[in-house]
Length: 279
Length: 162
Ligand SMILES: Cc1cc2nc3c(=O)[nH]c(=O)nc-3n(C[C@H](O)[C@H](O)[C@H](O)COP(=O)(O)OP(=O)(O)OC[C@H]3O[C@@H](n4cnc5c(N)ncnc54)[C@H](O)[C@@H]3O)c2cc1C
Ligand code: FES
Ligand code: FES
Image (cartoon, rainbow over all chains, first blue to last red; front, side, top):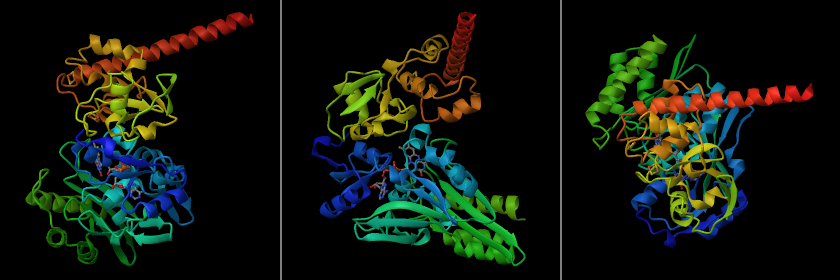
């Protein structure tokens, strides 16, 4: 461990309101959930924060429930909770698939959906699912609550619209009509960060096709492939759609993969999805 | 801070941000839990918290308040002998972690299920086949023992009724 913990301070609220008060009086304090991202950085010595806010005990944030036409997943819900939740299995099975693909069981027992969203890695595996599902992120501070469409939550690489004093309370998922699809490509099938991760919702009806595709690890943030969706829905020309996809994404060479590989695989995944579900 | 460690109530003092791994090894003298990577990848530091396998290298001490923790020191289970007999351990550094993870699996576990559930535990020595054999054997032995105990206890109850 490369961080001297004696220099760190942890504040432990008993309630959400107390958490908001602490955030007002300690600007820049870092919320702490399952710590599967935070403690990795702490171990590397790359975490700048010295003040932390322990959210783990706030059990209200762990709840998963259906509220009318919405499925609400508390920010502190773990992947294991998501995998075993009957409402999630019924409502959004592609999120269950994504949760299964994250880490090993030790990580699934601790990692939370709120942590995945706030951490904002372009490779976060729940993020393409939330993009394709047109989820809404519920943010709150001592000044109140606001709802942000997931597809406008990120403003750049690991940058979000969240203010310093805000927490993610939950994420809401509208009823999804049509078929859901999730696919992750990593170095090994378990416990690997994505080289490409894709989620899609497709609906066919009399007036045509309605398609939504979220994709991760190919741009500074998770993105929706709006143009590709439109071309596919209107023309059904998969070759043209693959070309459009390649112009919509901006993958890079990094330690996990190359831009060339990512473009090729993303285009292949699009074709796989198209052939399996839409032709 | 209070919690239950291997079935006993303990009251321990340490920095709230200290990794559970370090509290176990340095403050409580339980060095059976190992550090491999320190970043959640290898599973050598696996312990059970409220029955769930977790990496103790990624857990701040503050977050174990009021929980039930089990470490390899608190385990007496056929898995241990099976690892020794079936070639499930060579250098042994991964073994406590594998055993803690394996404890969460059912007696009739399939190979596929083992591979998925143990994917958060890495071993650089055995090539895994010895580990899978050991887990299968250890869990099925434990399952049989449990069944036998149940049979004996129902037989005893029946005898007492007569
Ligand atoms: C071995 C290993 C494998 C992994 N594999 C994957 C993988 O396959 N796919 C994947 O997507 N991720 C993976 N991860 C990353 C990680 O598990 C996830 O990103 C997880 O969801 C983070 O959640 P957490 O609760 O642990 O977050 P924490 O580490 O507690 O926090 C992460 C960030 O989010 C902030 N935060 C947390 N909760 C809130 C909240 N409610 N409001 C505001 N801010 C908040 C924190 O301040 C911090 O900046 C892996 C990690 C490890 C160690
Ligand atoms: S030491 Fe904790 S997972 Fe490797
Ligand atoms: S026995 Fe050496 S790492 Fe597994």
